[in-house]
Length: 114
Length: 115
Image (cartoon, chains in turn purple, orange):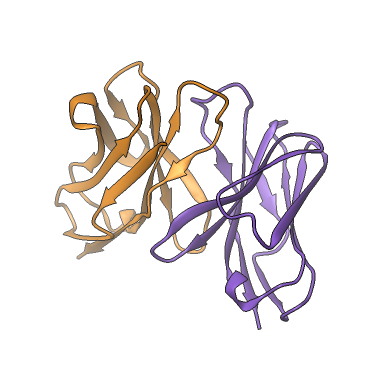
C-alpha cells in the first residue's frame, strides 16, 4: 500500500531555531511536495521537487528551504523559525508525467513555534 | 491561472440526509479535478478524481461527483450521510497541459453530521 511517512506528528520549537521536517515515501514517486495548512486558507504549496536535487518554489516559499538528496526523502527546512510559521505541514508525493494521478499525503506535522 | 472555489466553509446535515458540497473551478484548458477528505489529525485521502473518461465519477464511501463543463462545477454528493462522514473536504484542480504538476486546492468545507 502507498505510504508517505512524516517523521513527527507534533513538534514544538523556539523562535530562531533551525527546524527540519522530514518526509519519506515508499512508492518510488518522482514528485514530492510540501504544503502548509491553516484554518480558512486551505493548503498552500511551499516547495515541490520533481527529481533528486531538483526543486521549484511554490506559492509561499519565503522563510523555507528544501533538500532532496535521495528520491524517497524530501526535507523541509525552516532556516530561522518564527511564530507565524506555526502551522500544520503536509508532505505529498505523486508520479511524474501523470497529471491525472493523485497526490498521496502523509499524516502531517503540527508545528508550534514559541 | 487555475483556481478552485468551494462554496460554504461549513455544511451541516442530519444523519441520513443528502450531502452536497459545492466546487467550482476556473481553468482555460481541460482540467483534472479531485476531491480529498481529511479526518481529524490526519492527512488528506483521495475520495475520487475526474480525468475526462466519464462525467459522473464514483468514489469511496458512497460519494460521487459530476463534472459539468458548462457550469465549471464538480460538486460532491452522497445520498445518505453517515456520522463517519464528518470531516473536512477539499476540491483540487490541475491542468491537463503544460508542465505544471501542481494541485490548486480550495479552502475546504467542514462537514458536520448531526444525529
